[in-house]
Image 1 (cartoon, rainbow, N blue to C red):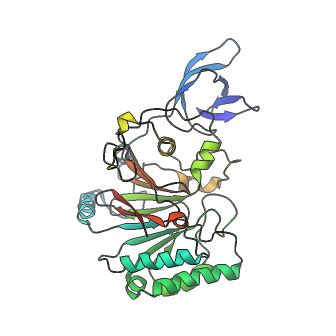
Image 2: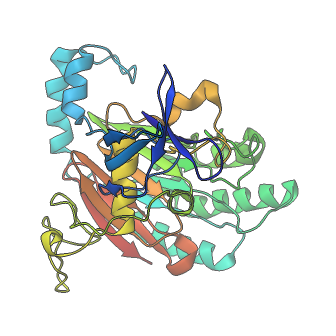
Image 3: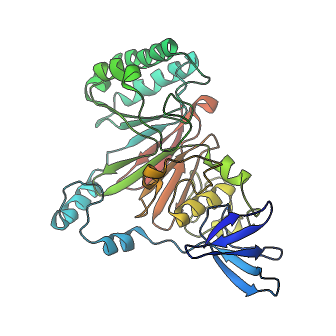
Length: 364
């Protein structure tokens, strides 16, 4: 059932038929961040006082992407028009696109001159790459609230900066994803694209610029990528009912810049010998829940009509959880989850190579 809170401090397990009060005094949990609104599996016994004494609590096991796709059958959720017979050819084309890459930058504060200077250096380097990468530019696009005239000026400055590199301006692909503090329709999820009033000049200078929602989805041949800009780690840890368990790391997890077993070149212990990082708990929680923001509406408002935009079923191939925390990259089940870091902090970004699922943590 779903965890919810009745009276203050009294948690309930709820389903469509009813609810039962819980006694969580001696509960042991599996890895994850347990908050209200999470769907859980609880094991225990009913007490004489009518409360269910929970001995063990965990999340439902995730369904891997290939299992979900087999269950869906020929239903085309992305509306690509690709037939099942063509799917094998698309997957082969994806594997052959070895030079393709995504450059992902988060918190691109256009109102800070040093950010524009570093962005110019980054564009200068990638303008000489063939084929050109896809640039995913994620908000917030200002470090503090700005008026309409200032915002127009910042996006014009971005357009003029890209125009300094004719190849990028003419042929480069750019996807702009708004952040939680960018102008939009209130403080609710999902966020609409940046208003055309701010982006018309940029669209004129850069014809292949796309303005996405937050979250958004990108399809690369047969691969699905979800991009979400939200300080979700802070919100999830703030609303945790239990402290994250100090469990051994998942054997499928990989750390930033690490090897397949979780170790890295700096001598960090392999995943079987180290404890799970809190970001691993976050990734496991979101993928087990199949939702990008499993929090109560009072904590993070969501448009009921568009809640499906935050669902992750089938499990995507890649989830970009753009957050103001340090960079990380973890593989859980069949899904790669990564955080590009906050660009203004140390001018870090991520290069992702979809043909090999490799992430390169970079800095300019």
